[in-house]
Every structure is written in C-alpha cells, then in structure tokens.
Length: 280
Image (cartoon, rainbow, N blue to C red; front, side):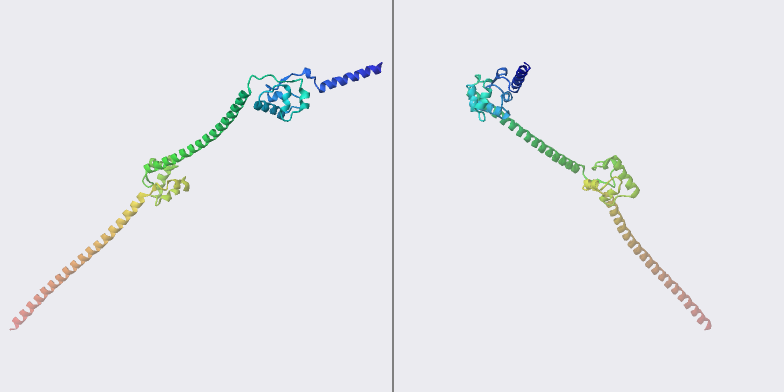
C-alpha cells in the first residue's frame, strides 16, 4: 500500500514539474500578429527581439497576415515555431489596407529624413553661430582700431594722468605712476622708456607703441640745439666786437702818442732857437 502511494506521489510531482516548465497554451494570452508590437511578440516561445522585429517589418511591407499560418512566411520562422505557438497566434483583420500601411511606412521614412535634416540644420546653425562670433570679434577689432585712430597719439611727457588712461591697459593708478616717474626722473627720451615705470611691461608697450610719442623731449633737444647755435653766433659777434674795440683803442692810442711827440718836438725846436739867439 505504501509502495502504491509513493508511486502516485512521484507521478504527481512529475506532472507538476512538467506543467511548470511548459505552460499550457490554453492558460496563456493570445497575441494578434497584425497588431502586436515587437516587444509583445517576444512573448511567443522561441521568439527573440530579432524574430519579433522581422514579424513587424513583414506586415509593414506586405500588409496584414490573413491567417495565423502566414507567420511562417517570415524569414527565420518555420513550422516548428508555428506548432509551438499556434494556440496563441491570432491574425485579426487590420482596419488598414496594404496601401495605407505602405503610406504609413513612407511617412515614417519621411519623418526619419526630416529628423536627419533637422540635425544637419542644427549643425549648420552651430557653424553659423561660430562664424557670427568670428565676425563679431573682427568687428570689435576694427572698432578698437578705429578708436585708436580717433584718439590719436599721446605724448607721455606732456599728457595728464587722465589722458594717459586712454592707452591700453593703463588705469588711473598706472597713469599716476607715469606722471610721478617723469616728475622724478625727467622726461622720457624714447617711447620704449615707458617700461621703466613700475607696472608697465613689454606687452603693454607693444599694445601702445604705435600711439606713444615723446614730443617734449624732442622739442627740448631742438631748443638746446637752437640755443647752442645762438650761443655760437653770439660768441662770434662778441669776439668781433672786442676785436673792433681793441683795434679802435689801438689806433686812438697811436694817434695820441704821435700828437704828444709832435708837441715835444716843437718844444725842443723853440728851446734851440732861443739858445742861438742869445749867443748872437
């Protein structure tokens, strides 16, 4: 009796295990191969994502399946697949005609093309934006150059601190240092001497070299030269005057000596004449 009960228990376990491994078709939901999505189609036994997508592609290209057996027309699906799933496969009539399905496919393709064109247009927009930024940069440079032309050159030996701030990278503090430097050390001899001011380096000079002049030192040099020339002329004139005076004084002295000599000679002549007269 125990042996019989054990046998029936074993049979029961095997049946339960068999039912757990392979669900009864009647207990599983039917799937309409004309409407189901690729994800839903993967619920079929031995239907992976690639097979499910082929079913969708087939019906979009050829139209709706007329009956469940037509699923075997899909590449990769044979009679074994159909036998495994035949109780779950249904081919409900689609309301869309093959022409409408074809049109829908064309619309989908057109949408993909439009999306692609939109991506290209977006890329072109980025390029245009980049070009616009470059144009803006060029315009700024032209504007800066125009401003430089309008502002003109600046004499660092004569300009005020406020005027000096018109130079690139020269703020009020640096401008003040320039003024203080020339007050303490005298005028700048060359534009390049501006780098001697604390806080001004070669880069700042390069930015401003076309606008910096040292006009006052040039004027001073010119004035010194003129003074030198005037001094030379003055000295020559003075020497000439001294020479003339000297010569005049010499001539007057000679004339005086000659006159005195003549008077002396006359005196001597009279004395001799008186002596002879007495003797006689």
